[in-house]
Image (tube, rainbow, N blue to C red):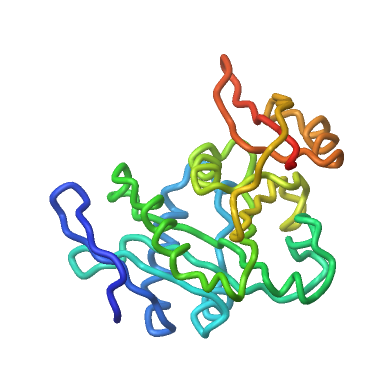
Length: 229
């Protein structure tokens, strides 16, 4: 296993390496542990053994963090099949040649005992450096509204919201996109809407606005929308 990053979690050393099919049992065990610890099971869309296997067989990239010789976190990128639900359509792509240049940022999990050290953010930075930008233009992903840690994670990486829709059998999700070719520039007008106002957000998105940041306002969370120049 080739180490691609090393660091400390407090005073405990850890390293990050690219995973392969032989690591599947560890990945499944950690996902079960993380899912078990969740109070709201809808927050995470777990991957099946087959989905993990598909990524680990070369249809994407998966990295894992190890401490004390144990897998404590992982992140994955998927090269998705071209189908009717491809997230590239939400970015505004239409041709198959364009859709093939979209990666999905898939599941991210950290052992609850190792939270609070920014490991999820570090793994995001490490895995994004593994992307071949000659082959891909965009990264897309989905997050449930009010899943504040995951939303903060996406915005901190430079992702912006391009859609809000029901997927995964009727679950409401934001669709995020990240343009690997350069950071977009936005028009000055900013529209602020409650994260809970689905229709107003969908209307803005249909008018060409994208969600660029979020903040807490009184007892609610709001999303700020702007148009890309």
